[in-house]
Amino acid sequence: MLKSEKLRALILSLLILGVFLAAWQIGTMPFTSAQVVDDEYAKLVGAAASTGQKSAFPTPIDVGRKLVEQLSDPFYDKGPNDKGIGIQLAWSVGRVALGFGLAALVAVPLGFLIGMSRLVFQALDPFIQVLKPISPLAWMPLALFTLKDSGVSAIFVIFICSIWPMLINTAFGVASVRKEWIDVARTLEVRPLRKALLVILPAAAPTIMTGMRISIGIAWLVIVAAEMLVGGTGIGYFVWNEWNNLSIANILVAVFLIGVIGMLLDMCFARLQKAVTYRD
Amino acid sequence: MQSFVQVQALKQSFPSPAGEGELVVFDDINFEITKGDFVCIIGHSGCGKTTILNVLAGLEEPTGGHAFIDGREISGPSLDRGVVFQAHALMPWMTVHANIAFAVRSKWPDWTRVQVDQHVQQFIDMVHLQGSENKKPSQLSGGMKQRVGIARAFAIQPKMLLLDEPFGALDALTRGNIQDELVTIVRQTKQTIFMITHDVDEAILLSDKIFLMSNGPRAKLAEIVTNPLPRDRTRATMHHDPKFYEVRNHLIDFLVHRSKTFAAA
Image: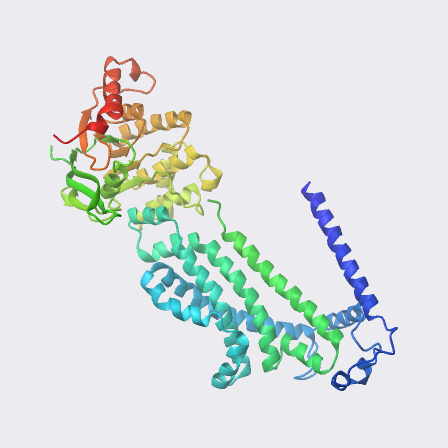
């Protein structure tokens, strides 16, 4: 029954995709050549786009062609402003890995401390609540001003935005370890470090992993936005650059690949999460 | 013989929610346990049996009174006192072997892996769980999980064992089997044991002395009954002993009638 259900879901997905692509194709087909557009818009996007010709919103076929073109040579390097999409994505993923990694190194031990000590929790809570809702784009100018380097600023912004879910989930996971397991550790006179590593950490691991999974999603969102602002090499900068070139097809290719990479990152963490989950 | 465990004037109370005075769970609890004795404590819910066990384990501190083991005051949990919790309290991410090994390594951190494994296997065999060493608790039945809890407590060879209604969550058939196993183990190891139970027959089978608690609030240790049955009694035959029904009736009469109306003399 499960197999047939999966098959039916797949067919439905393909159907939805087909309908979407068909609607897209029809919507962008170049048979409207006498479109009247706003003067301001015409100035902004250039003559070609404003007369509704082929170089307006690309058709799915155009995008498909561009996708194949980009993927056929993803790692070319013709200078600082012209690199293959593979290189761009690699830079972005690299920044995410660094920012997320640093955030994890801070969030897990600090989360442990907060989870185990009510005093620390109450002391740090106001800071967490105020810093947590600040948008990455608001951090950007501060980072650029103090850190000066745009690459480092991007990593800092990832760090400061992706740390919160991990921190809060770690604290929550540690604080909610079942009392009976703690009592077992007490009756066995287990020393604090051993207790933390062998009892509290495995007990809290599923909650911590959930926090990490949320955080990696946020980190990936942030990097695209951050790179649009600071430039350099990266998929966010690639999108912005292609916007300046008015190559909507390239933008769509990039958007699609951003989605795919985001999905792959999430799948990795979902697998890690499964590995530490235990049935109670 | 110098008693092994001494409890004096033990009292447990909470500040009353209404704000006036305190809610006394039990007070003026005095008893002694001799080394090698198996003591069962029976009483209705709310009389504080688990609290007394937790005080002996060092997991809780009483509001008043003192508890001593081997001449020293109890002031915190210790490897000297092993605990079998009511709901097995196994670590679900560890296998059966790892759960017991965790306890063994806590007691003897300098042992080699081989020594630990051998010791663990001994106790897995003792509770008849051979073949389940690498299973996680979620793959075990309730009875098997409780057996692991027992093996874990026995494996550290503590001076005293505290069992909090260890068979309460099991069905009658499994309970019977494990009771028989416990009888055999206890006869071999001659451990000092303090156990909470609601099952009168279980108490008569297992224990040398039965502590009877009156009802809370202000519960007291009403009576200490010495088990008249011979030490080689078995579950299958003890009800043929003439003294069995005598002591059983006495216990049930207490629980049904006198525990409510008992007042310290």
